[in-house]
Image (tube, rainbow, N blue to C red; front, side, top):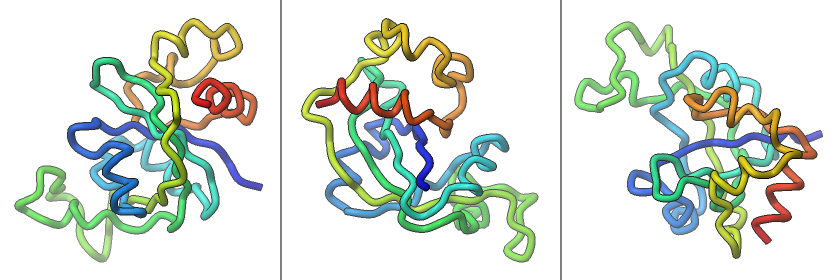
Length: 150
């Protein structure tokens, strides 16, 4: 049984259109232990709401799917990369990533303000743990947001 997630990315760094062009992409650069741990339990086939963060407006832009389970994020080992971590080593990685496959872009972008106004989403982790870039989503929350996105 697939799980449901929401993953945030800044659209000027890597947005839904970028994933659509590439078809698949690695979700690298996550440097939060809780978000990393969520990615480590993701399975191939898990559904992902692709969320544009730090945007005007922020919100859900579409759907992706996990197509490769967690593996060491190579950016942690690259001294020239902004996500380099001197404590990480190839034989002892700290940070992991998953690969996502583009599924669809919503016909209708669902902005954060609209999500906040939906009473059925009041307990969503997006509002309680807003700084996390990877969060679980319940099947009911998933259905409500997908329906809004068209």
